[in-house]
Length: 411
Ligand code: ASP
Ligand code: MG
Image (cartoon, rainbow, N blue to C red):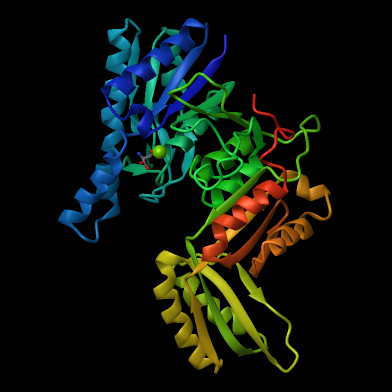
């Protein structure tokens, strides 16, 4: 008998017929001889609706009350699912974060899980009851309700799986798994049968929405396999697992593309100690996350410094940089919102040369100019003009053979 944690996202519990569909899936997993702990998100759209309500009464909501409000979406869906299960003759009970005791820090709206108590859940399981746990919420030391950041039910699922030493954490969503690239951009995109934790973290940080990045970090730390799959189909999805020797080493397992960043260049900054610190400190003090940074060595005592920030923070960042540029007597500040970032991710890059040059050659063949480049151990990103972004993604998808069946075959 295996213990399985099943987490169902907002679209999977989006209306009553979908909640019944989830109940049938849970019932089937029980019939197959497993124990199940279910985690659910709020019904699709509900958390957004609650957030809007908060801002309608107060444009700068106190985060304690904000969390008390936006965590209620999950209270509704756990009770409805427990009722649906009971109506099928399956003993089930709903639990909120504080009832389980999912202990977090007090970082309201972005709280981190510190400890998950499992005694109560174990007791219910022993009594043959299937617990249905609210995702996204916990409680701090003082008993305040907290939430884990948007998409946080994934993290609840994985944290429970870790604490209960479950065999797997199944994450049910509205897509069939993790794809080699966005199927909306590239019809040849294929579902991956498996992917490593590190690759998944890179993809999540590049904007793939399938999993909350913190959930993957948690899964890696406790070595919990995650199975991303659709609640509307019986097909296997994508396993997110530890890298091991037996795994086929593919060079590149995914290509991502996003237009969410903008570029700022400070032209002719004096090349001396403390300058980068003066430029970036006001930006980080404003809680703006800088992504790529490029600075070249200088020939004449001056250098250009280019970096990217989220478009949402672009205006604020530009204002701060312009002020600093004047102070340090840089020549000018250039700004560009018309950019896209294309990236390739693959664990095989660690041990293979030539991946970068293959990427650059593929882009060159299409006459796509590269504006910026950055790399990590298992990722290479290029910034290109926005109008070439989608083309670049398709070209790379093909260049690395992701459109063909030869790598990590679909199971
Ligand atoms: N309901 C929360 C949200 O919409 C948590 C989740 O769905 O994972 O962000
Ligand atoms: Mg969600």
